[in-house]
Length: 484
Image: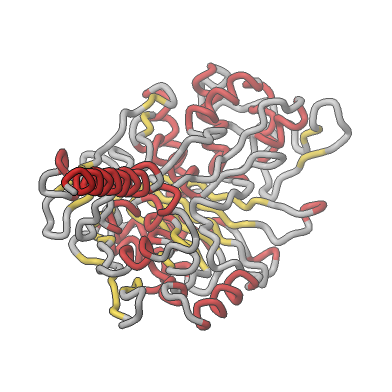
């Protein structure tokens, strides 16, 4: 009898060991496959069982969480709706996450192990209370950009030249991310409506859309020509016929302004003479033009802020005629508003470019800093002496050229207008551009660089221009940052 009891006990021990081994297999070895199985709702229930951390502008949250009382309990709230949508993106129980909600999801959702009070002892699958993401945005600049664009289609990007901090990022028309937060029929309907809208309100035009930069690209062309020694005297007359026949073709390039024939670079920059800068790009050569454009950030597919930025492009394989058009921001040259703000910032910052960034720091829910971000290493885009002369050219545009609507009392402002044509035979309504920087009279450094693009299909072709439509928006943003 005792022998059979021992056998039974041994068999029970084997069964217990098998259960422990199987439990370990399920919980450790196969945990990943169960976590990602669509039939497993536990990760979703756990994800939405607690409030999500917030995205902050200054000390104020621009996101929140509302208790739905459902199984997926907390839904994302966006009290400022469209104003910060190009920064926050959305966090949807049905459609996932975008922009900062996506790139900083581990912090906001509480899965980042660094949120634990003892991160080295915290399992990677543990869920702590959601942390916060503090942005670099300037609230006044963001509001000025949003109000300036109003009902028009376009975008604004503003950065601090000496650090790369993004101060404003606006895209219009925008949308209310709260409409996508839950998982009911209203969310499905909103998703379909927003995606079918021909105005594309969910498109982030500031970082996700590229445009022909038009004459604002002449900042890059002028810097390349100065660095290459093609231009030594800004006031010496150039050998630039008007009209200018593109090399190897019979196509003649003309100007909107008069008096561009053989105009000095200073005058040609002030009044945006296409013929002068098209020939200047050809004289500078593809190698120097490409090197300068890439130093400014063109053709860079790795830029993140922390979400990816659409790459701005400058065609490296262009022939001489195409190079002439590329040098005035046409042909295959395309840029995001953020990229053109970087161009203006490099001029303002003595030829040094700081890569832009949007997240200042991440914190635990109680405010303790988890990670802190700061300026990244700068790269020298042009010689400091070239930057000095570029500042002269840009300030002349605002003082007495096409950008006078951007002038601010009590500050030095540099700018460049652009009216980029597009469509077959340039039949489309042109995009209005303005890039600029501003330095208050009592500040040792420029505090803000701005790029504005306006695309208004309802405007008359003759009524839309960088100086008329975009410059006042840039001025409002610069005034907000400078406190003027």
